[in-house]
Amino acid sequence: MTYKPNPLKTASIVLPEEIESLQEQLAENIHEIWAQQRIQQGWKYGPERNDQKKEHPNLVPYNQLSEEDKDYDRNTAMETLKTIILLGYSIEKS
Image (cartoon, rainbow, N blue to C red; front, side):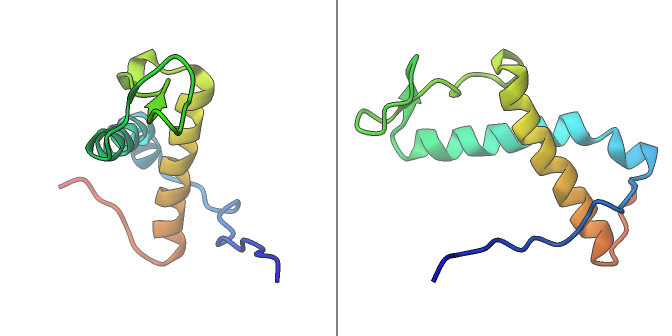
């Protein structure tokens, strides 16, 4: 059996501007969580990914990532926000 991902369809969700502005903060935090988990697993910075040595080039601060790598985190943040809205929840700043 071949796995076929079937994520919720969020293309029609339009986020309010105040929520959309969270994208960069969330993307940076997503990266921080990922990096923290990797470091706890014994990974360290390396110029090329090497699973044997547990080295990864993205174990750097968010502002040092390439735009392509930042976009991966940005997309994760936006899709998460859109999914929350699609599921009927609201997000408000307190």
